[in-house]
Each structure stands twice: as structure tokens, then as C-alpha cells.
Image (cartoon, rainbow over all chains, first blue to last red; front, side, top):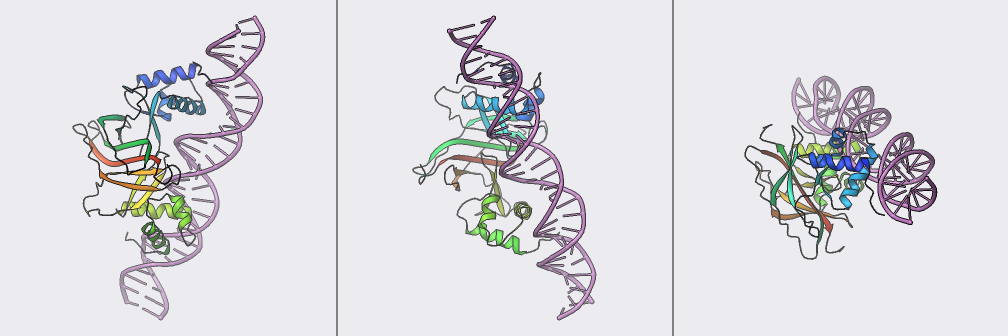
Length: 124
Length: 124
DNA sequence: CGTATTATTGCAACAGAGTCGCAATAAAGA
DNA sequence: TCTTTATTGCGACTCTGTTGCAATAATACG
């Protein structure tokens, strides 16, 4: 099942590229210059995620946020850093420092999710 | 508005005490020895959370998990550690090491949420 | 102990996130 | 240009979490 380059996926991708921060489905939907069905956005983003094109983070509000992979090695996707979500302006940004988690013997990590929320310098 | 000691809240609390891991609403509901309304469970847990009695963590599945506060200083609740959720058996446990997050100048943290998921030693 | 006050419950209805099946549409390759 | 099939749109659905309101049951107080 090769991937096709559609209008929706192209638009969504460039929206993410233009964004300076991670975006929720809703934010993306509103930022799009064309109308795209809700379900399609979900599907496109999931596809991007499967293909390792974007990161997916879960906020303490339980919502998903997506951001383009930057400086991600093709084979090493364990790019484990925290994200910061401002409770006021809603912006979600990357905290650059990488985090090293050590698990108990025999444990296998598959997914890392770190999010701190609060108020950014502009909203504090 | 003082808190009352009701049958529901008592049961929920002792269920959490008996648990060796963080529990979702659903898990708690099923573990309860008496029937308690869904909404009530949510309200009780939110109350516990407000009172600083329990921690609330969000999984990469977007769901809330609750765990009793242990070794939490009365005034210092910034007990920032990761949790590990096994995708197979569903258990959610604390990773003891504390995490230090340093934010950019002027940023204010209010909420920390760290979760790693994968497979525990029994399920790997 | 009985009574009044009001925190808490149960129920039902709701909101929002995310998913899925299916028929219609539109990329891509021949 | 035609064919194949990945992708879309629509609708319906699941699940988590919340809320309004009347009924219930803790607590305090006489």
C-alpha cells in the first residue's frame, strides 16, 4: 500500500511545517486553507505517525498533539524530550533537553510521553 | 465545604490503597466491592486529586490513571516521576527516579506528566 | 436522640476525541 | 486514456469525562 500524495495530506503537512509548535487535530483543522473532513485529518495524521514523519504527544488534557520530526535519525526515533503546553495560549513547544529513562530489568519501552504544562513567559 | 466520609469515597480509597499500581476509572469501578455510579467515581477521584490525596497521570492512550500519594510532603507535591504502563497487562507502575525539568526563563510549570509504555518483564 | 443543613449521590443527558464501514473520489501507473 | 486501489467524506458509533438537578445521607447542633 504505497502512499499517495493528496491535496489533504499535502496541506496538512505544510500546515505542520508552518507551525512553530505542536498542534492538535482541532488546531490543524482550523489552520487549514481548505476544508478537510475531521476523519480524514485523523487518518492522515495517523499515517504520518506510522511513517515516522511526525511525533505524537499526549497532553495532560488527554488530547493528542502532533509535530514534525526534526533531527530524527531515520533509524533512531527514540527522540525523547519533553513538551511544554501553555494553559493560556495553548502553544505546545519542545523542551530541548533529552531525557534518559532507565527501566527495571526486562522491561521494554515502546513509547515515551512527557508533557509539562503551565504558563509560558508571555502568559505568566 | 468540608469533606464528608461516605461509603463510596471510603471504598474507592481503600481500593486504591489495595492496588499495587495506578488505576483508571474503569479499573476502579470493576474492583469496587459495591456498585458506585460512574459519575460518582469521577467526582470522588477529582476530589481526592484536589485534596492532594492522589496523583493523576495521563497515559499515551489519553486516559487518566490515579495512584495514592506516597512519601509526598504536605507542602511539596512536585513529586515528578515517570510511570510505566504495560500495553499487555495494563499495569501502571511508578518509576522511582525523580525527573528534573528545567524550563526556559519566565516559564511556570503547574503540571507534570510523564509516561512510558511498553511491555513489563512479565509480558515482554 | 431527633432535626436541620448541605455535601454527596444517582440518573440522565451531554460534549468532545477518536475510530470505522462503506460508497464515492481521485492519485498513480500502464 | 483507462484501470487499479489508496484516500476521502459522510454518518454512525464508542469511550472518557462532565454537568444539572432532584433525592439521599453525612455531619453538626439543639
